[in-house]
Image 1 (spheres, rainbow, N blue to C red):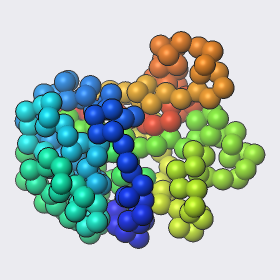
Image 2 (cartoon, one colour; image 1 turned 45 degrees about the vertical axis):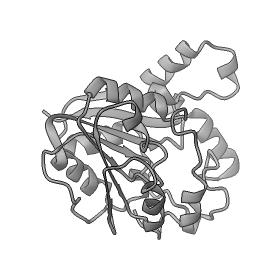
Image 3 (cartoon, rainbow, N blue to C red; image 1 turned 120 degrees about the vertical axis):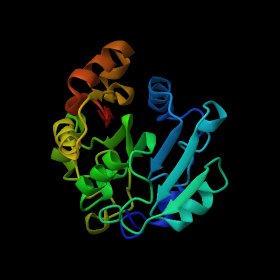
Amino acid sequence: MSKKHFDDKFIDEIVVDADNNYFSGVLNYCMKASLPKVVCDIGCGNGVFTGTIKNNYDCKLIGLDGSPHALKKASKLNFDKLHHLSDFSNDVLPIDSNSVDLVICKDVMEHLLDPLHLTKEIFRITKPGGFALIHVPNHFPIWGRAKFLLTNNIDTFSYFSESDRYEYPHIRFFTLGSIKNMITRSGFKGVENISYFFTRVPIIHRLIPLSVAKLLAKFSTNNFSEGITILVSKA
């Protein structure tokens, strides 16, 4: 991912509570499940989603990003190392093979011309017995498809409302099946679908219990989850 696909202004717009945001639940789940000693955040951005995990977990934290602007901001947080890459679709990650217990790749694959290259690199750097957490947006759940039908707008959640189609930062659109297939081709075996952390059912979500909404997102992810999220293991 480069500035060509993700401008500095989008980095500056990412402002969240580092300890309590929409990604906190799945991150804590994965940290507790894997108890990693080495964590690598690929596409760490300004660091706000992972840059404070060492406050609660004993681990080494490495961040990689394609934006020098983002890395400058991330350097103010608790990363042990930060690396700049020019292109996640082509570059070899500056991480030793079989050296990372948990790789986090959040909201990166949708920006890449060749996301399969990156998943193969993620497999390479993950330790045997280690894990990778992959998260991508789901633009077209049921309500997203309805919105697209009515508006002909691919930005169904208004992530980048000021961007026209010719400059829209997301260039790949995944389903659960397609992301699983890509991960499997990269060498990973075990796949746990944890997309229920990102359930969102407009209109009816106020009428059904959260537990029911999570079941819908887990068993019909493509239709009922705003994000497609999987935790995969390396045998």
